[in-house]
Length: 151
Length: 151
DNA sequence: CGGTAAACGCAACCTTGTTGCATTTGGAGG
DNA sequence: CCTCCAAATGCAACAAGGTTGCGTTTACCG
Image (cartoon, rainbow over all chains, first blue to last red; front, side):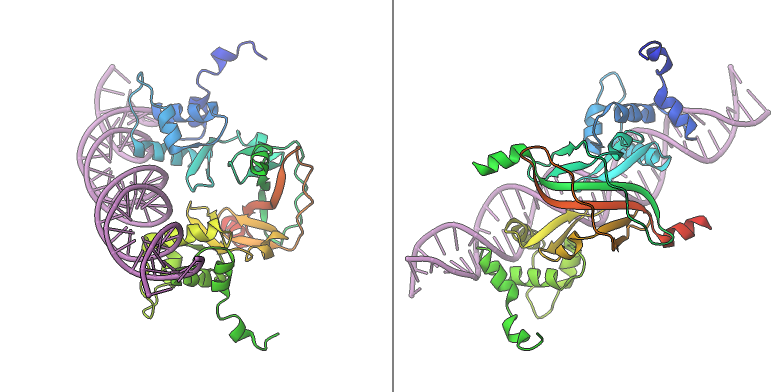
């Protein structure tokens, strides 16, 4: 599995973008690479920071917004809004590993914890409704914040 | 139950605010009244519009933000962020009627539908974690949007 | 009826996100 | 390899949502 990886995946992002039917540009490849490398969804500001490479030409703020929109539009990225009200982007597919388990959000520190438990089966939907995604989110205080509170 | 309601509840909001241990001001009472009267969580802009009463002195934009923050801080209101990234506020307790059932969010039109089904029991939590709230949210396209798409 | 900390009004500012328009470029076709 | 055009980019300006600083007013405690 580790063999031959490097030469084969040099341009994964470029291939994905080409396959999605949109133009392959340096900016899009860099952004999609960054999204793939990230373990969590990134905000526009965080992406801007990660793309700040002296070896590469600086990317315009607006261009980054438009690249993100285009990646979302062609299905290569996902857009969500976090608890502070800012948009966060992730590479499509990256969230699949999070679809199959339950999340716990600490209302104190804002941390998100992945629990081992599988989400329960969804209930029957009214006629005509189509289900895409199930989010079983628990909210409360995590172990760390609970103990700090208790003192 | 309908008897004697009016005189008894003239100042419900004021009493709640007093009981919460913060100063009772005209602004806070008006805002909390508006939140109680609303059937859905309101954004800052929506609240501003509803409070625009010629009989009352106009309320400063910043003051409204601070009143909302104070109501949230003392537990009388809840703050959440909608799909556009805007904060919405609701009177505490108003959401209790939504705690006991499942929600379906249409990713097309943004609508939220309350399903009859009860949320499943939460899984065991790691040691030290405290559970406050369970959100079992389904995402997909509602009947209306599904049929429009299908055409 | 003061005194005081909290609440308010005002102005300025910051962050996030969008729009319009001129310029550059990917890539398809000759 | 060259040409061409829609798509992508850069730049400037704007808009909405939200925050900070500071001087003034006010709720409410004694």
